[in-house]
Length: 587
Image: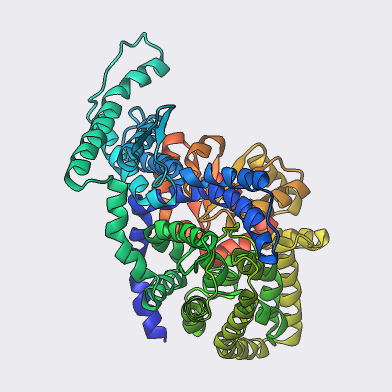
C-alpha cells in the first residue's frame, strides 16, 4: 500500500497543474459565484412542491407566485454564469498583463452576456410585444455560457495585450478613457458571436446552445452510469487523498451536468414522471460527500466514541462539529487521513459505494433523484432527506448508506487505532496525560471555542521561556507588529479558512491586539486583496500559491501557503498563529 501511495504521490505536480488550469478554475469559480442563485431558487421549489407529498396544494395565485421567483432566478442561471465565468477568466488573464494595462472585467462580463444571448436564444415576437426564448438561458445553457466567457476573455486579451484600442489624450479622465479603450475588443466580441450565430443557424437550423446539448448528451448519459459515477467520484477522493483538492479538478468537468440533471429531475417530477438522474449537485453534497470528501461522517464518530487511542479521541472530539457540516479538513490533516495508507481504501471507495446505493434505489426501487439544492454545509443526513423531498425510501437509503460506510471504514479504523495505542504505550503515563491535556485544550480552543484562558497563557509563557524571551516582551512585540494589520485566509470553499481566521481573531482579542481577519474561498479574493496586508492559503489550496503571488505583487501585499499539520496546529494555538502572522509580515 505504501508503494502504491508513493506512485500516486509522484503524480501530485501533474494534479496541481490541472487544478491551476485557468479554464477549469474560471469554470469552478464562476459556478461557485452563482451557487446563491441555485440555493435561493430551490427554497421556493421546496415550499411549492414538498407539501404535495402530503396531499396539500397551494392556491393557484400563491403557487404561481412561488414558481415565478424560481423561474426568474434559476431560469437565467446561465446568463449569470456567463458573466461570473468571464470575470474570473479575465482575472486570470490579467496576471499575464502589465499592471497599467489590464482587462476591464466589467466590460468583459457585459460582452460575455450579450454573446451568450446571441448563441442561445431566439427572438419571440407577437402582435403585442417581443422577447427572448428562455429554453437555454437556465441550466441547459451552462456549457454555452462557459464557451462565451472564454471566447470573450481570449479576444479581450488579444487586443489589450497589443494595445489595439482607441487611445484618448492624457487630459481625458481615466474612466472616460477606459470606456473608449473597451470599444474595439467589445465590438469585435459581439461581431464574432453575431456572425457565428448567423452561420451556425443557417447550417443546422437551430441555435448553438441546442447543438452543444446534443453533442454532450451522450457524455452526460455515460457519466450517470455505474462506471461513470465510480470514475468521477473515485477520482475526486483520490486527488484529495494525495493532498490536491479533488473537487477543483473534477467539478468543472461535470458542473453543467450536475445542475442540468437537477432541473430535469424537477421537471420530470412535476410532470408525474420518474426523476431518474443520479449525477446531481444534491447527490454530490449529501450522499457522495456526506461529512466531506471521502464520506467521513461515520469515521469522525468512530474517532470520537469508539477509539481506544486517546489521541484519536481528542482529534474526533475536535473535528466532529466541523465534519457534521461537511468541513472535514480538521480530520483529514489532524488524523491524518491525507497520505495515510491505512485509510486509502475506504476513503476512495466509500463515496463510490454511496453513489451506487443511490443509483440502485433510483433505478430499481423507483425512488426519485435529487430535485432540490441546499447549502453544502447542511449536515449530510438532513440534506439527503430534504433534497430527496422527504420520500420514505430516502430514509431507508440513508440508513443503508450509514451502515455501509461504517462497515467499510471500521476495519481500517480499528487497525489505525491499534497502531496509535501501540505508540502511546511506549510513552510514560505522566507524559501521555500531559500531552493529551494540552492537545485537548488546543483542539477545544480551535474548534469549540471553550479553551481555558489560563491554559493558553501558560502555553504562551512556556514557549517564551523556551526561546529565552520574557512573556511580556514577546506579547508586546507581537502586538506592535500586528496592531492595525489585516489578514485574509483562503481555502477552496470558505469553510476551513474560517478555522484559522477565527483562531487569529480570538487570540488577538484576548491580548488586546487590533488585528482584523477574514475568511474566503479562493477565486473570490482578487477584489479583496487591496484591503489586506497578508493572505494565508490553507493546505488544500496551496497549489494556487504561484497565481496568488502574482495577484499579491500587483497590490503590494504578502502571501504564504501552509502545510496540512502546520495549518491545524496554527488553528489550534492562538499564540502560534499570531507569531506565525507576525513572522510573515516582518519578512
